[in-house]
Image 1: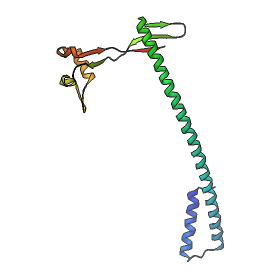
Image 2: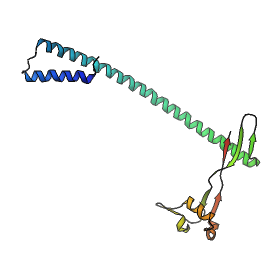
Image 3: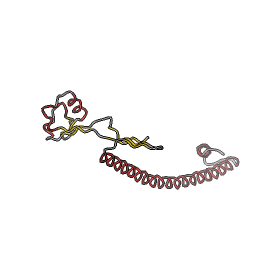
Image 4: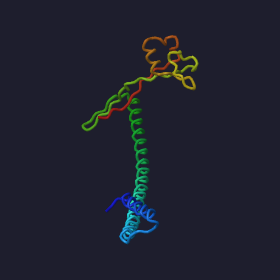
Length: 169
């Protein structure tokens, strides 16, 4: 079976012959023209049916992705809720670790600290300012400055936090 573009090339060739010979072609060329037209029609219709089938498949896939996306979001929210629940409960009970035969849960410090500016934004030391449309704290620079003792004069406006996360093994 020939490709559609090969059939189209053959039809163009017969068209050129028709133009060159003033609309006259041999019986053999006429038979070839009719066979090419039929093959082109059949091949185009077959491809169009394939396209329709793929479009239907695509709609099914889109619908399934939407369904799975909703499940993913619900599951992520449930996991986050359970982690927050366990974290708060462990913190309230002052328990850092729970182990049994099949699973271990540890309330561990995050590897990164965070820093928040409690004062007025325009009071942030210039070396800790991140330029945006508004003043905001460049937290990485502020933490480094804090560690170097460069923020002692504005310490009342600073709160250092150490977060925790669950590590389930």
